[in-house]
Amino acid sequence: MSNEKQKTGSVLVVGGGIGGMQAASDLSEAGFRVYLVEEGPAIGGRMSQLDKTFPTNDCAMCIMGPRLVEVGNSLNIKLLTNSEITRVEGYPGNFKVEVLRHPRYVNEERCTGCGTCTEACLTRNRPYFEAVEPPVRLDPKDEERVTGIINTYQAKKEYLLAILQDVQAEYNYLPEDVLRYIANRLNLPVSSAYSLATYYTAFSLTPKGRHIINICLGTACHVRGVDRIVERLERDLSISCGETTQDLAFTLEGVRCLGCCSLSPVMTINGKTYGNLTQDGASKIIERIWKEDQ
Picture 1 (tube, one colour):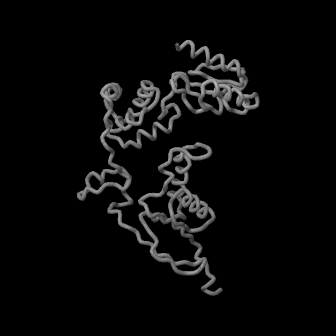
Picture 2 (cartoon, rainbow, N blue to C red):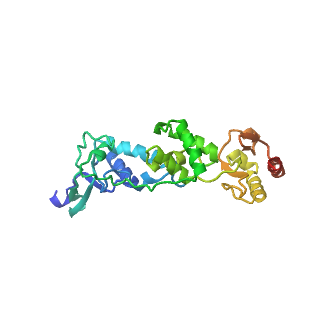
Picture 3 (cartoon, one colour):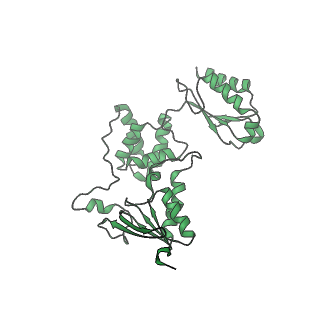
């Protein structure tokens, strides 16, 4: 066999995003030696900055996490981060690639990613991902309310989830400026507060109504005409599913299952279950609750 037809048996993957990680993992499982080149200091790409993914609405990190582990644990994958390709030469199946690796100035074998080195750095270098947050100022009354909640937990960052729960109960949602204020007071990145606020469905970043209507859109309810009930409620409330009325009285949300298939069509309002719904019946329930509020 001539040298021109020899294959090297190894593969170069450029870019450590979700596509690059999946390609590297698949090639590794196929028996190839894989070199994964990423110009950034870590793999993950843009997906690491996302909250949820379309169309399943799954957590982005839940999708990316297993691939990070696969790439990190595979003996067939050589990870070259902080690197860029400067020259490529050769022919199909046998390329020579020159890769420039930029220095990290840390011992990669001992690094745990704790970030302490950035505080001790003599040149005061900042990490590439760190952003300087502007100071947050709240209305005096809001500041007093939020500060009281924070002080209840002694302003400890490990109680962030509990603090957000109390703020959600106080405002019925999590205002953006309040989230930033909490992160500032707890000496946390704003991303830490947002990651919790967007991960748990119990939290909302937009104002919610006093009465939360969860109407089931699952299979059992669908075949029994829940779509027509949703349309009736949308007309009565003058909102679309997923929105809140202007007077903040009702929020209409669709859910995939309420675990009450025998009662379908079914909805809950503030946790109370209403089953075997009809269009007129659902409308009367909303009307009765609205009158009780007056």
